[in-house]
Image (cartoon, rainbow, N blue to C red; front, side, top):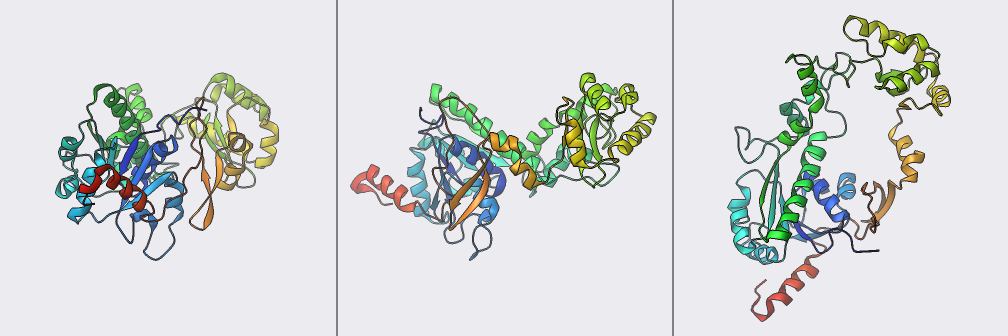
Length: 385
């Protein structure tokens, strides 16, 4: 087995809460040394209120990382970080624009210390524009990006869903992709880059289907909740079963829809899977009545061997225990902090690399001694850190 793909990369992570944590989690799981820079005593915000054990979100996103607790208001701490930057490959920060400059930790300052440094600023609205200094959360970034307004089901209010798309995909994963690209170039050129990731920007760039629908309609925006993938087609939506559960039908291609109609005993519906406009409601009502005639377990048995893109909608517990998730080893148990937590494994598979939890989520400042001793050894007798 070869070394992890990101082995020997050192990343200083100043971020807090979910977006930056997801970014550095994936990089850490792929082998990078991620050093969390945290405030002393209370640590970063995801740890929760002072004096209480870290919350579940912290445990889920901070394995395989080290913690260095420093007070960024102290000159000695800034000097230590400047020294640490000399051996770093990347910096990740999620402060509002201008904060890192006031601390003496902005990109121009750190680039002068290490020209090959990749520096990623991950914020809600980016480093420029009229909203750059504004606070926000996932629901706000989804709204500004045009995603939230389309997330409407059956005429209800817009909902961001329980998976924070803007934070995790628009923020965390977009930042990880950008950092890997810049790190790849820095390895060749010896010159780093400053990366400006705005969660609102990246979420907007993911909002492809409504924009495609608008193009198909000659510039007319799709009705919220009625575009192709949010309820505008009978062959692509969820249907309630007799026991109050749901079946997810994704039979967009004709062969899948034909197989589905035959399996549910309604071959007459085969020509109507793509009904839109005035025909949509009537067709959906007929399908809904058919699906409501049996329980989810009965439909599972009927559809088990039918290749029709029709699946049950499981609960979280059922999803964790699903044979597919188990076969892919997606659910793991991680010990640390006096408890064992159920977590998701790194979902990336590649040859000659086996994901493993090398470090449990760290205590605040757990690695201060290790990291500062190594710096002192490098600096020799003249070190003042």
